[in-house]
Length: 90
Image 1 (cartoon, rainbow, N blue to C red):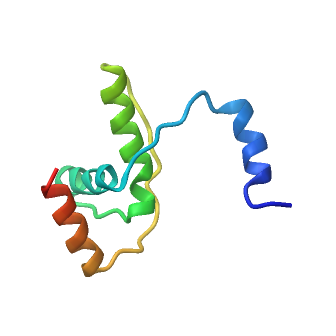
Image 2 (image 1 turned 180 degrees about the vertical axis):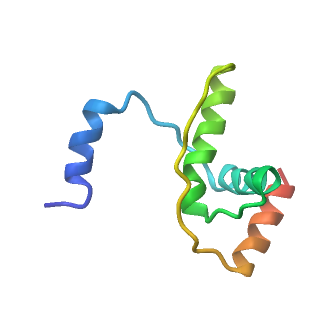
């Protein structure tokens, strides 16, 4: 077995496409979510939000509903400072 083998087998038949995001986009998603909901997501949990935002922008999607799962609570103040600086610089 290899890591992700079963997951890949399931996803290759069910996933239509993937969206790649970078760390700046993840930081921006954390910042946007904070301003919208006053919730601080951890970077791994913000991947879905960053991907959804990038997809909507890339496809000019409007008048549709999206659901993303943002999980995790692994955040400390040093990370938060870095994320805030990265989000502000973009």
